[in-house]
Figure 1 (cartoon, helix red, strand yellow):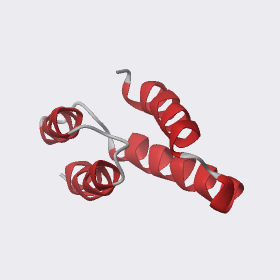
Figure 2 (cartoon, one colour):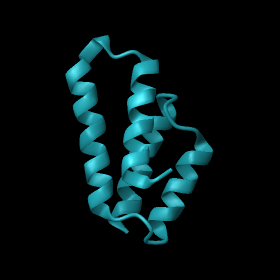
Figure 3 (tube, one colour):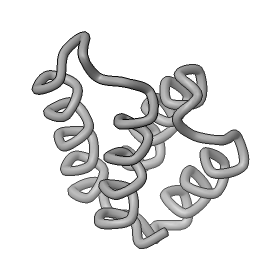
Figure 4 (tube, helix red, strand yellow):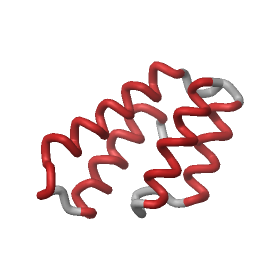
Length: 79
């Protein structure tokens, strides 16, 4: 259940930032609640997204972040 809680929080932030649609967010949280996503995958994804933000700093464009976030998403969650 911790995976679902973590993903719910993270995905809300990504929706607010425009980097994730509400439908994607709901699907992801549902998969986590069903046990299809392990907490370790969530932690790895969060770390990768945070690292990307930290590396780029204020130079990170929305388009660039969206692309890297989608790639990280596919690697960790297979969608």
